[in-house]
Each structure stands twice: as structure tokens, then as C-alpha cells.
Image 1 (cartoon, rainbow, N blue to C red):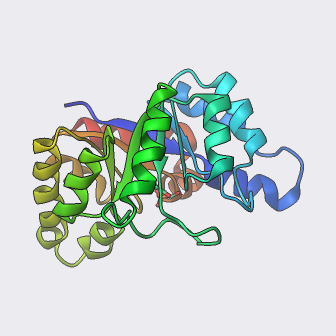
Image 2: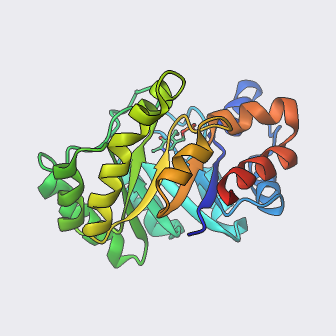
Length: 239
Ligand code: PXP
């Protein structure tokens, strides 16, 4: 199965915001990532707008020709943005407002009532819904019951363990991917994926629909150039 590469461009907005102004130009970078071979663009507008702003999201929506994926905690502001922009996919994350980065998946059992309503609202907008989640089978099964189309595995723990014990790092994801497939859920993954650990993840999770990668990819681009970097990540997924 072909795995799509969605480039998360939050870091581009972080650099721009450091100076005000419009350099680097977030919309142009998104367009260029598509030209360089990205299958999608991901953004995560946070309530404090420290990187991607609502205005960015609206501008990007008009220009992106691949899949637009918007991540975030589904508060009223986020839902309003989805109504306006109608991206291909909404990835729901359980982040408290000021967290540095998403570092936990949903507790789909505890949050079942909230998520069920939100998911049906998003699906009614014609947007694919993905839930950011860890490898617990009960959480995954519940995600399917709540109507999610996909789950996005939080791959932080995989990346942390990868250098010391690859097999131990991947094992819970392999099992969780089987559970997801049995429930009819498609699988995305993201967080701390990079040029070292991506291929092994993809090889072991063959039904991986999409990865969204930001931090490592943009960091690699400082050395390798953006065009080359996007191609190198794509090559890892083709293998
Ligand atoms: N998926 C989600 C839900 C995220 O919040 C992030 C970080 O914004 C990513 C994927 C991408 O993680 P990274 O920047 O480590 O590649």
C-alpha cells in the first residue's frame, strides 16, 4: 500500500513569526512542498497562534491542491475553522491549550460522549476524521465505535525507543495496527518520525495510509534543502 507523506509546516510559521513580516512565506512553502512531491500539507493551529494562524489556514485552503490536514483540539474555534475551510481531513488531538507539542493520544473511553458528537458533526461536513491515539486496543476499538474514519498513531514512544531496541519499539504498533484493521479503521502516524526511523515503521505497518512529519523534515531541510528532503522522505516510504 502506498503511504502518503503529509508535510507539517508549523515550523515554517514559527520562523516567520520570529520576525513578523512574511518570510518565509508559509503558503509558498506549502505549494513548493507539493511541487517537490508531498502528498499533503498538515497544519496545527494552536489557540495562542504561536505558529500557524487561523488566517494562514484560510489562505492555505485556497492554494493547496493535495490533501489538506488540519490538526487540533476540537473546541468551537477549531470547528468554525473546519466549517470555513473544509479540509480533506481533520486530525483531533486531546491537547490542553498551552502544551508544547502533542504528546498523548485520546482516552476514547472517557471522552466518548464528547468525541461522538464532534465526529458526527465533522463527518456531516464531508471531512475525514482521524483520532490521535496510542496503542491501547480498547482505545482503538472505541475510536471505531465512535465513528472515526482513521486513527493517527502517536509515534513519540516508537521514536524514543527506536535507537536502543527497534523490535521492542515497533511491537505495540504492529499489534495495534491489526486491531485497527479488524475494526475497519485506516491508519495514519506521526510524531518524531525521521529519516532514520521512518522506513522501519512503514515496513512493519504495511497498511499505513499516511504519515505527517514536521520537526525532523524541516530540520533536515536546513542541511539538505527542502526539495531534496521531501524526495528523501518519499523514498523511505516507497521502499
Ligand atoms: N501529528 C500530530 C497530531 C502532531 O501534533 C504533530 C506535531 O505537530 C505531528 C504529527 C508531527 O510531529 P513532528 O513535528 O514531530 O514530525
